[in-house]
Image (cartoon, rainbow, N blue to C red):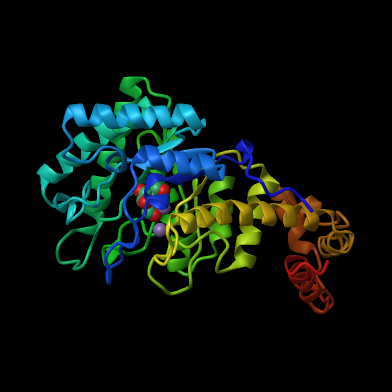
Length: 388
Ligand code: DIG
Ligand code: MN
Ligand code: MN
């Protein structure tokens, strides 16, 4: 049996807000007592996590005094040193405080937009202080309930101006930091701007420093939009923009459930893990998820161990898939290529186009070929169900 113990090279990380989730939901009070950031680091060290991420206010409460902040940071730093857990990513909470009720960077109130920049600069400093190399932006409140309230193009411009400002701040400070933008189609706003990873990839190209900015796709968020998550991840990877990834799971057509990785759609999770392993993804694998409300902290540890274990089992399945002689023979047959069409591919030129114009194609013969995808998919199912 393969070894499914988490190893540092997988860079498995959890946010303080994930294992620190106290079970509150819109219809019920918390079911778990809160733990301090330091206690959560020890918990993550116990389950074998590589790293911990935080929003500024997960670590330092928004109204903490400087002395309180220093005490918290000192305790947090000791827990990191004691456990060897590192801080690969940080982010700003631009959604909890009532001041952000109509957004942060895209708010109609210029005081809110300015405060959001101030808060973000402070939060970037905090993340860099603990070694973060990736900084995530999730614009959970950058949206509307009524489109009477905001010009959508103006909102995008405001988001762009803010991103250009924070990129310049990082350059000015000389920080070794890059940004990862996280999309979500809705919740908590009725509609959120830049709702999918695809929108984010287009938005990034309009920035002053696009080279500093990538994406942080989340499984649940793209599933909420009804999109094949692995396809979006592959497009981001191919564009050199997969700077970070939020792993979890989600029932289609539901609110953002942030379920344990692989606990709902194991086939989709397999194709995602196979893609990440096949391309040699080297950035953090962040489980932006939380335990069921029913759990105590032993259950939270089960949740965290389960996220990492399922990833490792699926990585082992991906290796089996790549070594499976029948599957690989089928893939070779499906992708057969006698090279006769090579003359028409690659960069255009008039001669190539001219020759292609006269190339005969027997559509009936070509279309009559059976592609054996049913056999291939069943072999995949067999492998996932452990009978291969
Ligand atoms: C929610 O999916 C968001 C926030 O939790 C955070 O800003 C980001 C970091 O992964 N994910
Ligand atoms: Mn989510
Ligand atoms: Mn997320």
